[in-house]
Length: 188
Image (cartoon, rainbow, N blue to C red; front, side, top):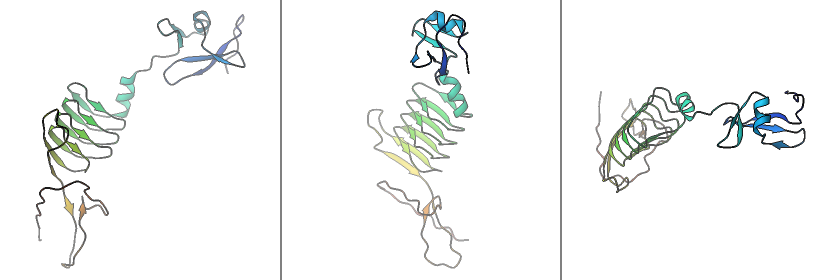
């Protein structure tokens, strides 16, 4: 615990996550003046009128949260926890915890916790892992037209009827309007 410096009736109380130092007089929390701030070894930011312990860097946080993600283009967004993403183009988004996704185009979105996708074109959206999505829209259209390729899978050894699910994950379904559905039946 920090003690009061000789001649001062305030001392540092807490440092916020953005680096601002809040002082106390023993009863109340307060923002120190420049002399009080610098007496305790902190930097006083004239532009904001605050005492600063460190400068918060959103670039550092982004680097820590998004391992091996590459971004080329403008106005692209990568949310927390994304690993191995690659964005080429503008106005693209990879939402939280979506890993191993490649996006090329304009205005495409990989939704949260959706992995291993390739998304091409304009204004398409992927909400199923292991998909290929191609958007065929104008930049002003929104995600109206898109082609999605994904897998439904099931296994049977005796020819009985079994349920088939997206990525062979039990109770996983596609909740979108389907225009065309192609089935490939593979027998071993």
